[in-house]
Length: 234
Image 1 (cartoon, rainbow, N blue to C red):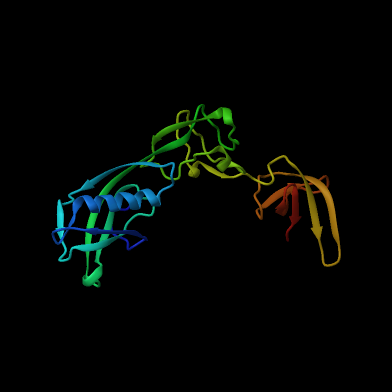
Image 2 (cartoon, rainbow, N blue to C red):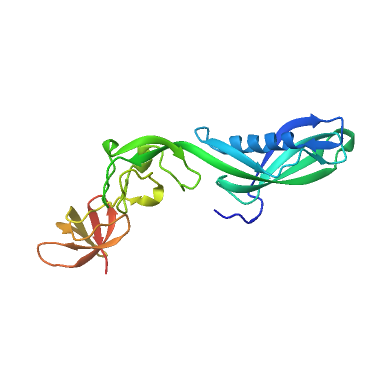
């Protein structure tokens, strides 16, 4: 997680006008605006705990009525330490005046994620009896898997120990053709298309070039064009 300011990522206008007897913006209003921004930016199923760092009781701005615009400036995930710029813009007679107040918040996220209930070997398609849904902190967990349907068409790319929360970097697209599969080998020339049966020597995803064999020749090279179909390449 980068904690340096990388530039404004997103903007959210909190359409509310606040008024104070003094020409200040309260720290409570700042916190409420940032908390609302975070809540609206994250999916509904993600819960948060927010620890604001060094927010003052009030901030002098020179006008009584204002609305607030919140920008997050160094995070697209809204996890961990995030810097926000809260812009207090005057409304009414003092329209046109504004002041930017920097706010730093430490955001912890919690949600239900899939956890392996047994050790999973590489190149395995996950089934429902191999995982369980557990509510856990996801602050330091990049791209957690929350629903088994999200893994359709994928298999494990590594060993996954029992009790590990699943993340998308543990998976890759499942091959269209797998080693040992029967395949149709397609020969194409300018005027002729010939098909014969063979088998795959390697796994292959769509457009991968793999080795296939037939009853006549070994080590033919072909491009995967679909389920069980390979076109020979020069």
